[in-house]
Amino acid sequence: MRTIPIVARTLALAVVAWLLVVGCSVASAQAPRRLFVPLAYRSASEGLIVTSAAAQLALTPLEFRQAAGHAGFQDLTVSGAIEEAVLVADCADPDASRARLRGLGFQTAYRSVLRGESTATVSRAEHIVATYGSAGSAHYVAQEMATCPGLPWQAVGIEPVGQETRAWISVASGATTGAYRLLFIERDSVQRIDVTATVGGGLDALIALGRIAATKANPATPTPLASATVTASPTATPTVSPTSTTTATATATPPPGIDVAAGRGASALSPPAPGHPAGDAVDLLGGGQTGQDAATFWLAASPASATTNQLIRVALEQARTVSAVQVRLALPTSGTVAARIDLRDFFGTTILSSITLVNGTAVDDQAFGFVYGTPVPNVRNVDIVFTDSPAGVAPGLRTLGVYAPTPTA
Image (tube, rainbow, N blue to C red; front, side, top):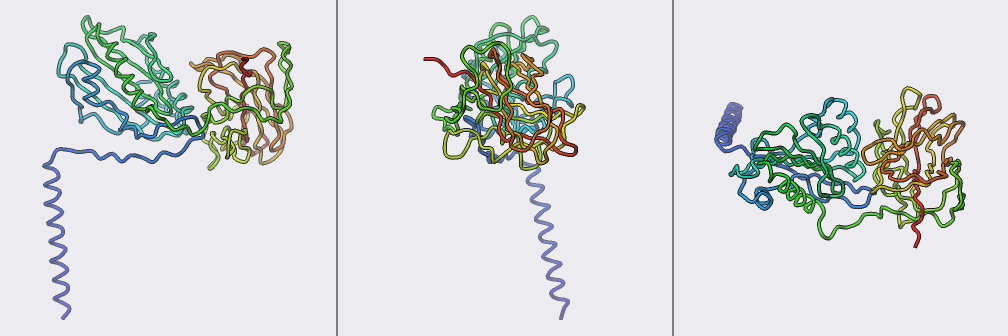
C-alpha cells in the first residue's frame, strides 16, 4: 500500500527536474538581460538629496544624440550596476583610496557606455553615476576621485557643470582624436563622464552631456529637506566685538553669526560606533531651524591617541568665511581630551591647521569653542581631529557648529 505514494512522489520529482532543465535551456538561448532594483534612499539631514536611483540618472542613447549630434547606442556588455571600487580604480593607490571612501554612506552606482555610429565627432562616452547619503559625502568622494588622474591627463578649466566641476584633457591624445574627462557633483550624486572624440569637437559634447546629466539629478521642483543655513540660537551671548584683534580666543559660548554646518553633510575617516554616524553631529533639531540636536551624536568606534587620530569632517555647501567653531562633546567617561581644528579649501588643501580646540580634562556635553580674531576665507571643509581621549574611551561630538559672519545689509 505504501509503494504507490512513493512512486507518485518519485514521478513528480522527475517532472519538476525535467521542467527546470528545459527552463534553463530556454533561458540560456535568450539574449542576456540585467535586472536593476532601485534602492530605497534614506533621508539625510542635509539640504537637497537625489530621489532617483543611479541607473535612472545615467545618460541614454537619445541624450548622446542630443549632445553629439549623431546616433549612438548603449553597449550592454560593459554597462550596468558597478561597485564603489570602480570610482577609484585608476588611482595610483586604489586600495588606499577605497579605504578613505569607506563609511561615507555609499548607496549605488551605475555605468553607461555609449558608442557613436559615426566617427565624425564623438566615438565613445562613458558615464559613471554614484549616489551617497548626503551631499557632504559626495563632495568628499569627488575630492578623492580628483586626485586620481595622472599622466596623460592635464587639468583644465571649463564652463561650470553641476554644483562642483573639474575637468581634464588627455595631453597624449593622437593627432586627430582626444580624450576628455568631466567630474562633478549634483546634490548627493558624484558623476564622471569620459569622452573620446575628434579633436575640436569633444569638449563641447562633453559639456553638453554633463549638463544633461546634471539636470536629471536636479529636477526643476526639488523638495528641500532642511535648510543649509541655520541661525544661531537667539539666547546666544556674543563674545566677539566688531573690533576684535587678530588674536584668536577660545570660548565655549556660541559666537554671533550664522551656523553654516547645521544640516550639512559630515563624514568620519574611520568607522563610527554603531548607531552614531558622523551626520548626527550636525543634524537639526526637529520642528524647525532652532539649532542642532544634541540628543543625537557622532561617536568614534575606538579611542583617540597620538598615533590613532579620530577625525570628523563637515563639508560646507560653498566656500565660506569662518569666524568661529564650537563643539559639544559626547564623552561616555570623563578624562583627558585633546582635539584640534583644521580648515581646508575645496581641493582639500590646508588653509589653517593645528588650532587647539580642547586639551585637558573634559566631561560629557561640555562645550568648547574657538573664535578667529581674523575670519578665515575660502573654507570648504572643517576637520575636528581628536588626538587623545580617556583610556579605552572613544570620543565624539553632540554638536559641531561652524560660524560665518552675519551678512551686512
